[in-house]
Image (cartoon, rainbow, N blue to C red):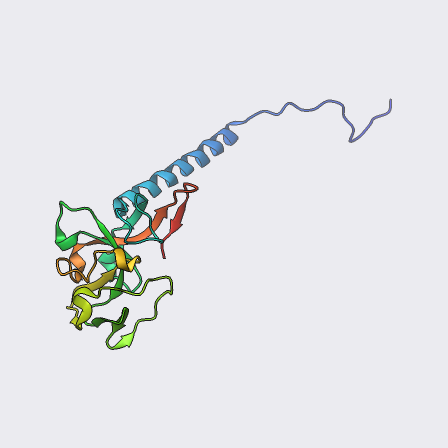
Length: 194
């Protein structure tokens, strides 16, 4: 009788063994735990704020929702160019304002002929910002205190910001945090805020 080696017409039944099932459940458990941890971190460290008004257009549109990192400014300070969320004059009953940091503590800020000057030097900014029609209280040089920041909306001529006498420079303790991510209306995706 001839024996055929290597050829078989019968397949072995594949059985799912206990170690495979255990491994699948282990992977599912760790994926679920990672997603849960991410949500806990985002919602304990961050918060969601709605954009109200046109003062930050085109970067942020009225009605859009943004995520704010509440933890970052506990370990560091706001930097020029950061978009921050703050309560105007610390009023807890007001909605959060979203503005861009232009002047830092200890700096002298002035708006001359529609442009921002920091310590007498023209601030290099994106050309998309409009020339400022009304300098407000920044028509004369403002010296920012140790914990004060000068903020402006990106839509410079349609923004209530540090130029307004009733708002003025913003204190760090009124800031909720840095805006880092925005939900896009068009495709329901997240985009990082510059």
